[in-house]
Every structure is written in structure tokens, then in C-alpha cells.
Image 1 (cartoon, rainbow, N blue to C red):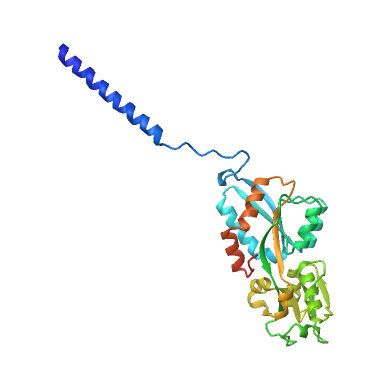
Image 2: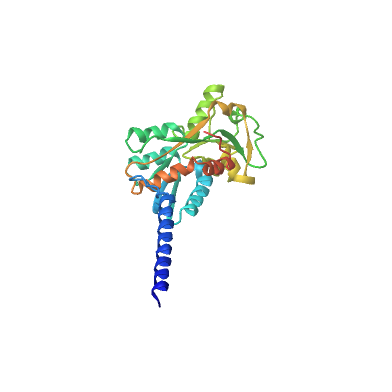
Length: 271
């Protein structure tokens, strides 16, 4: 190679190197810096493990769906559900049962956990519910109104007063002046519904959501006086959770647009 050709090659390589350098510099300036993740925060990819959710019996259908949807949205997570009357759940938790999230059918039972320093942060209301009369499909006692539940010979079943649905029943009685004489007081709405579907009771006071979930097994009878006792449902992560990030994420999912859609489909009112 002669001197002239050699100098041309050197100049060409220098020009190419300069161009590559300019492009790399421009790319570095244009590319945004990755967003910093706040210390202690969790993203969907960080969530893993399992939690136990204690939920009111009236939430069984909707929270089963919510748990399945949450697990699908967050692979590697597991949501275990424990259902019972809210007052029974509070008793279990205050006696030391391990849990991560509590969802109550009323604010009174949530307040008991707050007083016991078992709630992490402030509870958030996520739904409302009202009572409805449940009768067998044939309605043998011909119950049509709240006052009919007090007729002699009508076997009526209600929740115990310490249970949210029982407290709502008492509130309706006080507001209407109609005193019921139930043949039994149960610890949850599911137990009341069981008495009706088995034929042991002519009627029972449960939530409208329970009637919807029961399908053709019962007939629901709405009554205007139910507006005298609207139950508000709060939820919150529990203090001492073994998986606080997952507990907070599930509680947030309940009040999210997706969670609210599931609850509305089950018959719950907006909080």
C-alpha cells in the first residue's frame, strides 16, 4: 500500500470512530434513568408467599373470587381464607390466632381489634349491605313483611345480637317497634341460611348478598325497614403479619376497581 492510500484509510477509520462516538453520546443523553424504587416499597414482582385473611361469613362468595383473582394477578402468592361471624373472628384473633388481614361485616368489631392494637394502619370501608328475609321457595308460612316474622307460629331464625347481622336485626326491631321471638339465634348468616334451606325455619334474616348467593335454594323478600340498619364493611391488614407487604396489597385489591366490581356483582353496595 502506498503512502497516499494508507493516509486515506486512516482518515476513514477516524471518521467512523468519531461517528460511533457521537451516536453513543446521544443515546446516553436521550435514555431516561431507571425509576428508583422507594425504600421498603413493594411492586407486583416483589410479592410472594402466603397470607391468611379472616373475613365475615357474608363475604364467602365474593372473597373466594377475590382471592383467586389476586393469586392470578400475583403468581407465587397464596391467600388462605377463614370465614365466620365477625365477632367469632375477633375472638380468635384477640386470643392469638395468627392472621394477616381482617374484613369485618361492621365497624364495631373492627373497633375491638383496633382497641387491642391488632390493626396495622387505618381500616378502609369497602362495601355496605342490608338485611333481607329469606324463606323456602314455597314460602309455607306466607311471610311477606318484616312484621310477619313476629306472627305466632312463624319459625323465625336470626343472628345472635353480637354478630353484625344480629345487631342489624335489633336495630330494625327498635326502629319499627316489631319485637321478634326467634326460635334460634345463630353465630353467622350462613347458619341462619342453613336453617331455612333445611326446612328447620320458615324464615330467616340474612343479608341480600346471602340470598343472591343461595340462588334457587331460597326466596328473598326485601322490606323497606332494612334501610334502618345498613352495615358498613371495613378491612385492614393486621399488626404482626408475617407478610405485611402481601397483606397490604390484598387489602388494597379489595378496594380497587377490580375488587369493587366483584363485590358489586355479589350484591354489595358501595361504601
